[in-house]
Length: 359
Image 1 (cartoon, helix red, strand yellow):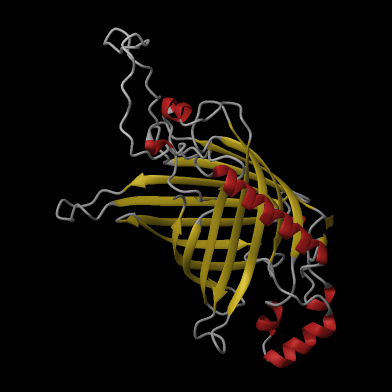
Image 2 (cartoon, rainbow, N blue to C red):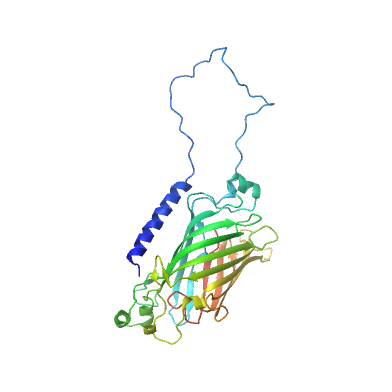
């Protein structure tokens, strides 16, 4: 549940984003005055500067327009839409959106061309602030009464990112401060039982149990490709979840009145994550139309708790292909953190989705 402190923090973040938006706007050249008078002739004895081939005027440095992503917003985590089958739940339409917004600057490199990056303003060793938001929801179309849309994850964060070593957009380290919740409201047993009776469904009542944490994170990303392309990437995420945080207050985790005897703290099952993404070519017969560009895509994720490393494990694999640049993948997950409500339960889930890794 969002308390008064959360509202003040949300307003503070909104002001920061607005300031970053203003600061990130490209500057416009000064306007020249309009005049209908013809240009007056200068006296013959006035000083005249002539430009010759031997002494050309200095030219403005060329900026490669492909050095930076068009527009202001960029991807942070994969943005996706798909259909999910989850153990102990009804199937649902699953969609997430994840955006990254530069604060007080307009720098977000997307090319490995060092010269272009330098001309566009990239400073080796610089630290760049960002605001990011990831949201997830599910719509139970035909599997629950009235096909409700249920919020599952809301994750605003502030990031300080530093690009490491030889420049590549996927070679960076970042420090993040974040809040993560499911946006729900039930936090006591009496309300839970009342809603369960009204809904007539345990799952629907459980989906309205409030979860929330504040955390600090240290993330790192490495480009492992030897060809210079974005075809192989390794990511490490370390997250420390506070018992009491500035935005959340007391963390909202599993409570005994929820039932079951498998409750755990989030830090027991989450906080250390490794993800390996890679693309691989797929050979197609010559009769396939040339517009049908196909590229294989695979991702493997391993997760364990930062509070009890190696005590609990989660594995997820995605495999699919980009068909005419539309990335369609099938996935399977076994372990914890299927969603924030059931973060502590060991479950299986699978599905198919269109997953956009970058834009």
